[in-house]
Length: 88
Image (cartoon, rainbow, N blue to C red; front, side):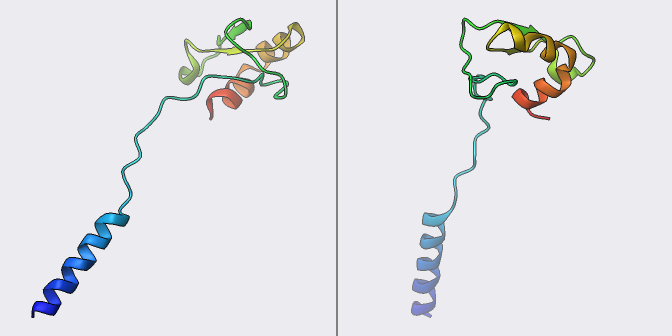
């Protein structure tokens, strides 16, 4: 009986040692690259396109872009580029 209790205790201690901590949800990371040209970085000084579509998921959000050539395509197909930045 004592061996059973000792073995059970050892299993419980080992299980607790290997138990995973619950993952805390984190805020999405700040946008660092242009969705049109992912090799180009964006920062706080970059211009942005505010979402004007009907998807409530993106209301009040904006996507930064690296240069003037990226602005028109992002405005034209906002759902595509906002999904690339913020997920579907």
